[in-house]
Image (cartoon, rainbow, N blue to C red; front, side):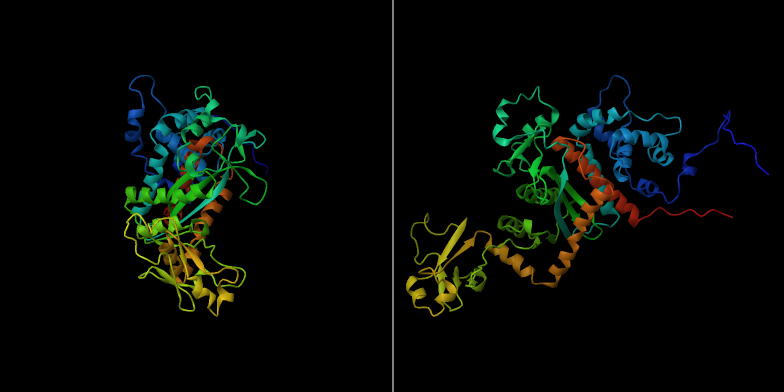
Length: 461
């Protein structure tokens, strides 16, 4: 028989528990076990006034942001709506059914104020990394580094050629926040001081973003997110925002390695990266700190005309000379200088030459220097470190490292496809840094939840 029509009737009393309505296998249940926000209030205490109205709980704001970044909710306005409606989100944020959800404008107020002044998001990220270390997900033996382009919130039609952009004419008091941040980082190694080469265009709304065509397609404004990961479980141990140019990205690896050493006392046995990080100064920096560079070397010494390249000549470090395949020596200096200010200084590029009469009488001159009177070879300052990297590239461990390097690229794919961070919402270097820190925190929390899922409760019959 047809049952009675169901109509909603308001009850006088309800017995309702949000916890009972959140599935045991829900992602937020697993993540919640690893979210430790006990240090937030002491960290922010000095940034709050002792008078006035009570503020919104900062732990609530952070939990809401974690929900957004863990589940790919990019808009804070939409995030507030989702938390208002979704019981699992309310449970994670410690909100009861009758508790109001903060306004979306509250996030902007706190982010541009006390969150940024206290570097709270960096503190949150490092707290999550410390939890990963405590749970045995980070050994600190093998690190991998890479960078990925994230499109900036800047319209390429609203831009100016660099020649028309006069920094001295900008009045900081009247400029937007992103322009003031751009002026603040002009001497920063990760931004303005990374390179003397000026970009072709500068955005009016976000001048610190880089005009780039690195994707071999239409150019756009972007920032680079730089990851330093431990390859055991792909845990992100550090992250940094930079300009989207190679010099800034390579420099960020040094900054991240130093920061991880100072914060967590992690000193890797090896660092894994692609060819962009294989310059002489970078390899020398790593070798000096006893970090094995599992990195392809940037080497332009090869020849295309079939003649002998530099790799065909043997380096004799004891006598400071190269030895050619015919057994002849190529030296930088052929006499001892009594003046200490003369002779090799160990810096820059040194040139080693063979004797002209030796080369003219050599039977292999056609294979060595057919168009020159004598053969010369240049040796860079960090050639010893470059040779260390070349020797490592011949080992079985290097082959394994090249496979492990793909873990960084998988994290970037997860960042863009799953978390939806293909384009930034916040502008300026600080905005990019905030988004990258929150996204990396979310990825580490999801990693903890995957490795250590929440125990399932079985219902009793």
